Length: 93
Picture 1: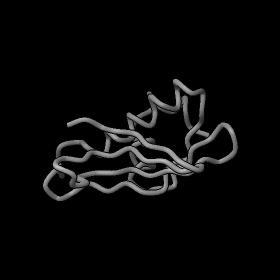
Picture 2: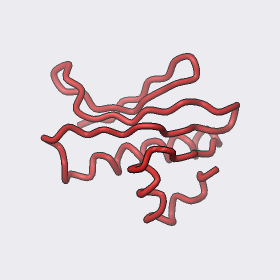
Picture 3: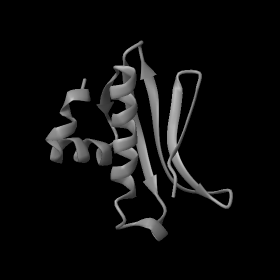
Picture 4: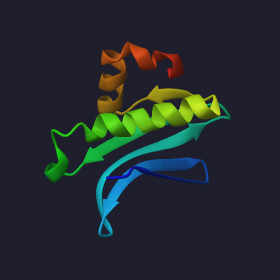
């Protein structure tokens, strides 16, 4: 499964779709020129336990590193990933 990224008008999302059905998503809003606020993560029950949520967070981290952005994880799931994985703290705002 491939994680896709779309952004428009200061908002964006990483998501997984299969046969035009959304199976997972993580949404964000831009905060100024240098920050992303992750506000929501959702994974379909059929994919639970496969670390899809963590993969979405890792996609956001890779994007933030590439674009020299910082992340504010307001979503409880994303915050829990950041709390457990110190290797991604370089992108925390």
